[in-house]
Image (cartoon, rainbow, N blue to C red; front, side, top):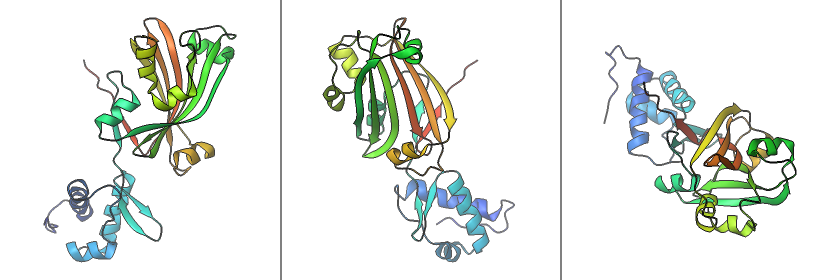
Length: 241
């Protein structure tokens, strides 16, 4: 068992943080309960103030969470998303050992209108599919997506198709569409009440708005507006010189 070195110049709470973090990452699972403050004090011979400092920092950094009246627990791991190549939610969750699923909340065929027409590069009178989906991993809500797809390019797509088949699989298999690239724009925002309810998260937790434009050569075949849980995702971009 690792011990606190009281003769070290490293503050006691930081040493304790390292010990608890090692335990979290190597011995505990998501949502496992940590020892109480009193138990940590006794085990590592430190003050309650030191324990509270360490626990507060671990909570701030997203490693643990507190449940009122119940205790402190290991936070679910954040999904690390690499942004240097094209990705799909379904495939990324499978790579992480998670079971992806989607719940179709709405499905309509509507006129594009000026705003969506501009984003898709089509006339405002052209028909588009508009559908909203709740994306889940192991049954846990992760993202809320609203997607617009030109009807002319993908005729006769149904709600049932989306409930049984991944969107990009539909594009490539049924419609022989070849995705060449996607462009995404990120913006942090305050989670609205109805979004928080669907995502099963507190309103106080921020979200990330992601706008995606998916291309087949120079033609936009999908525009999606996503609200992603800020407590579930971490994105990485590699910059090279």
